Amino acid sequence: MQELFSSLKEQFISTFIVEDRWLQLVEGLGTTLLITFFALLIGLVVGSLIAIIRSTYEMNVKGRKAGRVSDYIIKVLNVICNIYLTIIRGTPVVVQLMIMYFIIFASSRNGVFAAILSFGINSGAYVAEIIRSGIMSIDKGQFEASRSLGFDYKRTMALIILPQALKNVLPALGNEFIVLLKETSVAGYVAVQDLTYIGNLIRSRTYEAFFPLITVAVIYLVLVLIFTFLLGKLERRLRNSDH
Image (cartoon, rainbow, N blue to C red; front, side):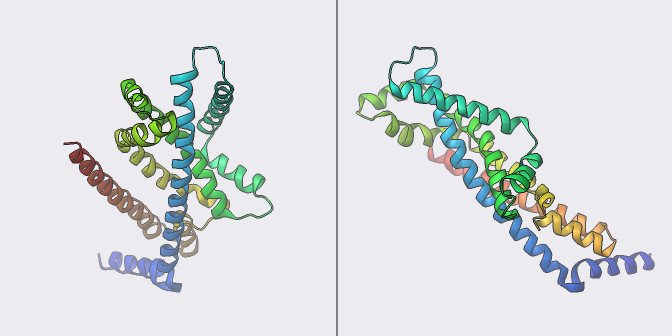
């Protein structure tokens, strides 16, 4: 037993203390959170735009003969959105990441920027379907009521429909955020020194796998639990505001 504790102590020291490796883990955690935050913003913006385009097409254009220029524009944009969704949801995110890094940004080789764009664009495809389902769940009578009050389509969507849709799909959006956080662990494929990459780097230097990998797993678990708790509080507050 004493030998076991002695061995664990040596592993702990070599993993965290030697060369201030715990600081490397902190920096890796910072990179992970940075990528997740900006990718989330991109995903929300891209996803919201695509959701609005697709829901507008389904509610106002689909099934009828296009007579106005705006109808043709919506049809073309809807086709582009469908192609985007098919490609992004049909290919692995790690492949998209490598294409972004080794092909699109081959000249700059900015791994963090490539990772933010890759994960943001990937997340946008899933966010789009989540928000679209939220928009389509809103009663059509609310569109008609807002029109009768003098609201045009843009103001109706921005002030009445989208706030309700986002509230309805908040749990699904929160789950997408958690998935996005964990997906960033593959950023090391393009030499981004995120949390997982640093953990594996420490393992390769110390030849000890237990503490580096378990530490990385625990950090991800703690982050997920914190975000789940915060999202739960936000959901309860929004639910209470309805009463």
